[in-house]
Length: 208
Image 1 (cartoon, rainbow, N blue to C red):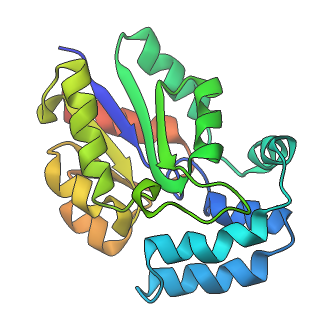
Image 2: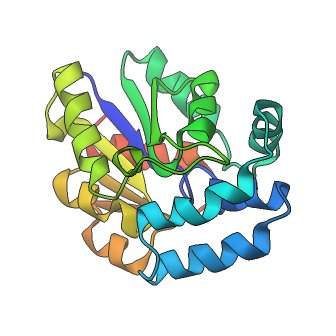
């Protein structure tokens, strides 16, 4: 039976968050830091977060997003992990609350599918297209149905509260430099900067 590896992005595959790196490039880091702090305290909702951020990103072009992606401080060996998963005939997915226009660039690094908020700089967000932590559970379920595998053949990798619903759903989970709350429910933990090592921890969970 093949496997499905589901990766969070912010804090898991990269240092910090895509939204902060986008905002720094746009010269709006201070403003978005305040918004992110409110979100982390539960004072700013998922839709409101983008209602506040997207006007600040309205001048960014596709070339700018390419440049931001290239400048992002990624963890070590992210492309190598995607390549190994594909080589083994397994599946990979990146599921994040961050903008889809950023995460889709991981497809060029070998991720098989990429999922994020369908938002655009300078436009008001469609609430139906903004993801929440619980959206990750639904996306995982649809991927399992597509690939005809069960929860026991999935491995999830994440770091924070946005991963808690998915970690509670799947038996094989790896907290990557995880928050205290995520560590409590994770099947395994990894602390470090190399996603290959976190991936090796995940493979051990399913005995491969």
